[in-house]
Image (tube, rainbow, N blue to C red; front, top):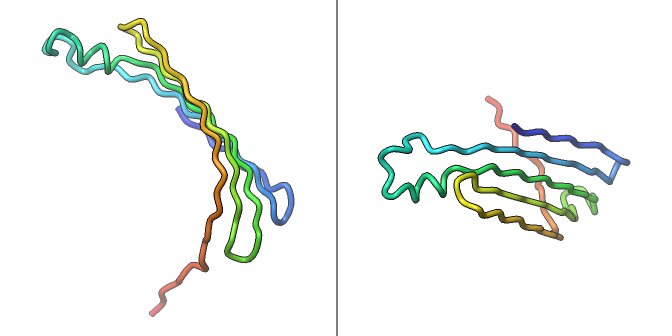
Length: 100
């Protein structure tokens, strides 16, 4: 399951959000070597991202984002989570259009 949302605050500022939820299960639980593959495969995963973008000029942008991810294994008592903070500058040149 996934969801994306974006809102333009002004001509130069945009915020966006992304949510993703995944349930992963092993296809064949009988033929795995000591069920290790099954233990690794069976997990629930979720990720949420919030991003802010500011247009600096016609082709240059600055981006700031925060991402939180979490996964929980169903066969093993293990859970992991992560947080990522990111700041970047991007260049998006004018698109080329081909015509005959």
